Amino acid sequence: MLGLVSALYALFGVVFVVAYVPQLRAVWRSRNGAADVSLGTWGVWCASSTVSLLYAHLVNHDLSYTLVCLGNVAGCYAVTGVALLRRQRHAGAAVAG
Image (cartoon, one colour):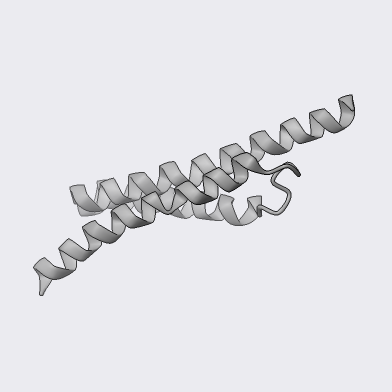
């Protein structure tokens, strides 16, 4: 049973990380400065995924858990960073236009 759970965790870990791609694409293509993206929510997810990564690495010492958490950290910060970039560019275009 533990082997099955471990395999499922690894599989879904990859699926979860790949699932950031459509959100990243949507935020990047946003024409309104990603105004519909909640930076507060994504900020909490960034913090939570960072704590999970630290726990996986420093407490659990589990490589697969650490890698999944690292993927989540990368995805969360990528979406948040792109949303911030889109807002900044949108605000700059509004001022210039």
